[in-house]
Image 1 (cartoon, rainbow, N blue to C red):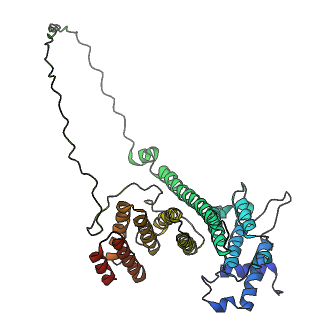
Image 2: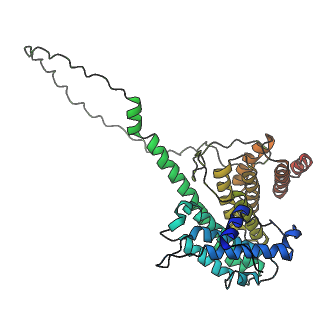
Image 3: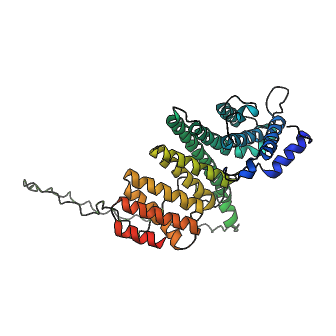
Length: 380
């Protein structure tokens, strides 16, 4: 398909559209041959323009090229057939992921130095798409491939959260450091010098007499053994999903308590990708990998959108359900009760609230609390 636009104008169109590909194949009109060809042309032109290099061979726009490759991976995943990879000039999806990794680990981003904050997001997306592509093509080793890439994505998300928390701590240290507070709160006061005291005759005070050393008395030690009394502390009790529990505040390990938010290129798209990957991991019975990814998704949603957002509540629902499946009822009850407060206060959307109550009812059935299960189903 030939384009009548210059490459620069094609890129301008790509930037305006933000490559808003449809979230699923249900929007069939987007996948008609004519519309699909337009997107292919825009993506190919974007790859060509963002392939500019310096005389020494380094790329001028590595971050923007990485973003376009991520969009190509999404387009290939949602396109029928396998020929879409070669259309973009790559031999396989793994080559796309390898180039994104090489672009994201450069020391000099040239013209994209101001976009360096998006690199980790694109690397996370690349790992998730590689995992999904392994499932799509029914790779014989899809279980190990998906586990490997999802774990790598979790490490990158953890690094992303730690970088955001470190930046917040540095900014707070500059504003509220001891020197800054001393300068702001310590007004200058004139120095007052007290007059020298007159020299007086020194008087000797007689020393007190020394006391005699106490005489040590021999105490008789009882030879009868003493049985220690059992501890009366609270033992671990079975967790009930019925009682309303209040979780005490705990120290955040990923900077969720800070007020600043991270900068993302379409956070909702990344959140949907994380949820899709977790769902496929569950289909393959990779429970531990799914729980790990849901935990990082929950932390990311809490850090970015807060504890009352639909993304956080949805991740909490799925994570708590996986903990019930794994037999970690205490941890599941803690997460369920946190989300229950949001649902009862009507801060979550109706769809998420209904989904929470149904998942809660399913978890109650797993722990043989059938009457409470019926109550939650009726409430939903």
